[in-house]
Image 1 (cartoon, one colour):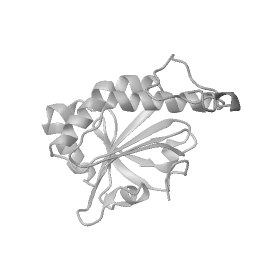
Image 2 (tube, one colour):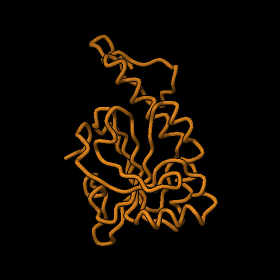
Image 3 (tube, rainbow, N blue to C red):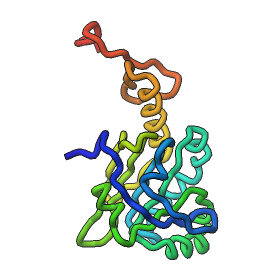
Image 4 (cartoon, rainbow, N blue to C red):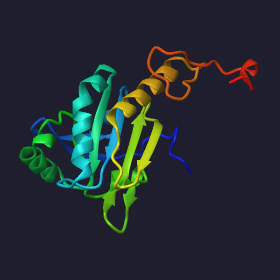
Length: 187
């Protein structure tokens, strides 16, 4: 069964954020857009390139009212150590959520059980706590923050304009479609 349009399952976790350990739960998400950005492990190879790319675009996400949660099965202590020792990870301003119990990874169905790490999964959650976008990549394929930003803008647009849809490669400000019988077979 797909997780699309389902509620985020209950969880509580500790995150490293701006020099502190904070608690994050499913209740923390209500009323704002959220991105859960799962990655296999701290101190690895593709992961810091992705997290750094998100950090470079974090202000654009914040302007849209979106909080990003980088999530791995490492502990919050490991997140702090990586943040303190890596120039790339040191620029992160979004919370690094720790999931050593695997509850969050299992809730989002990205846990690789035999390895105890998460797949590269991206989930966009709306202010009601419902999952609106899911993207899964193989472990050796990095993601693109600009494309994620485009998808978030599309999700926000269709939420605000429920009678319209965003076509392929839609960018903010471009034309959308209003589904109707008149469009059938004409696109």
